[in-house]
Length: 175
Image 1 (cartoon, rainbow, N blue to C red):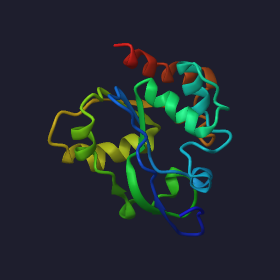
Image 2: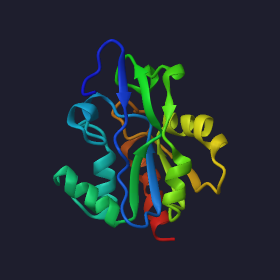
Image 3: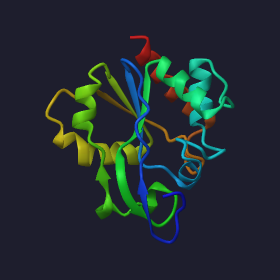
């Protein structure tokens, strides 16, 4: 689906994962701009690519495919907690809780055993993971960390505070 109407079904993108990832960054579900562009974090005011580019040494203006290569080469994987849902808008608050279908993390973590840290891009991703995924995991779960959302709708923290929090990814990669 590439656009949201008054009530729309949303499906997540496939995971972005390279060889031996150490870190997995999880969002909740793609928003309107991402669905329209078929790219993770496509909203022009979302800070995700700016933060990751600054931390990993690449321009957030690189073509999308090159940004994904830079992420995976650094040991970072990218996915969403929610495989499918219904929602009335583009915000996490617009997701209808009864419609949420989580992704299969049991299978994902079985295949990608090198992942040691999971970072949630905001509260909604963490909440849904802890509620719908964590109780179903039978194996060891990576360390879980919530980061402030990079969404332009999240203005509770300053840019500097968000950047400081997101630097935890670099620390996890260097462990």
